[in-house]
Image 1 (tube, one colour):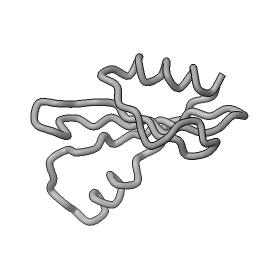
Image 2 (spheres, helix red, strand yellow):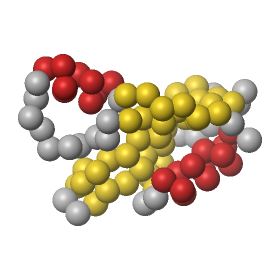
Image 3 (cartoon, helix red, strand yellow):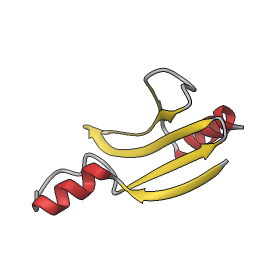
Image 4 (cartoon, helix red, strand yellow):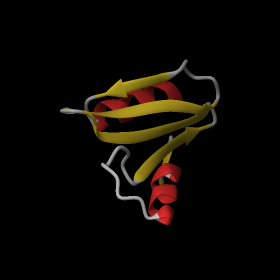
Length: 85
């Protein structure tokens, strides 16, 4: 499994437009990949009042439906490893 980090598209667009916004999405998006598929992992700080979470969704490979949420990055990475190895 490989991992790369890139700036999240939503964050780039908001910054480019000069929006002053409550931080709904983290600046960075983690992309996990293997020959089985590609998974995106994004942190949502205070997305709901008092609730932050890591969310994964499948970009390629049909590994799981919809999205999955985790309370820690460690748990999200572990799930990605399970799906991609």
